[in-house]
Length: 231
Image (cartoon, rainbow, N blue to C red):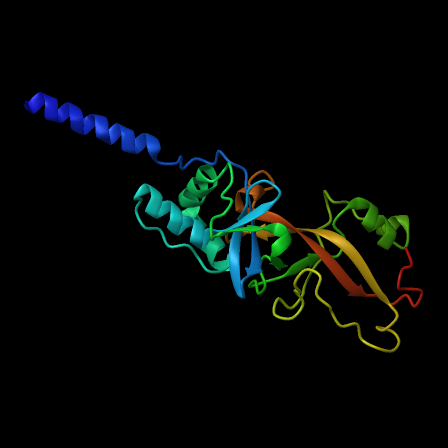
C-alpha cells in the first residue's frame, strides 16, 4: 500500500507539471501601452490582431492553472525595471495564449483600442545627431568634416522626456513665425530602449543592455527656411 500511494503521488505531480505552461521564451510577442474601456494598460501582442492586458491575462492564468501569484506592473517603465523578476511569467502568458484568447475580458482587438506611447515618461531621452553614414555625409560641409564611425565619437543630445513624447496620432504644436514656424523637419527613427544601467560597454556586449526597440516620429526645428519638406 505504501508503494502504491507513492506511485499515485508521483503520477498526479507529473500531470500538474505537464499542464503548467512553459516558462521558456518559446512564443514571440511584443509589448506596448494601450487604452481600453477608459483604462491605460500594458499589453502583450501575440500575432497581428489582438492585444492582451498582461495584468488580466496573468490573473486568469493563475486561476486556471492554480499557479503561484506574480504581480504584474501597471506601466511599461515599471515592467522594464522588474523584468528579471517577471519575465518567466510573461513567457508563460505568451505560451499559454499563443493560440489566442478570443472572448476573454483581457483580450482586445487592436482595431478597438487606442495605442499610447510605449513609455510616456522615461528617465532620459537621448538622440543621436547623425545615426547612419549617409546622414553624416549630408551634414558635412566638406570631405574633411566627414564622420568616421570607427574613430569619431557620436554626437548626442538630450530631449525633455516629460514634454517631447506624444501618443501615436496625437496633435503636437508647431511654433508660429520664422524661423521655427517654417523650419520644421520630420524623420522616422529607430528607438533603442535601454533595459539596464550601462557604462563603457563594449560593442560586443551592447545588446545585453537593450530591452527592446520601437519607432519614433521625430520632429525637429531647422535653420533652413526652405522647410517644411513637401514630399
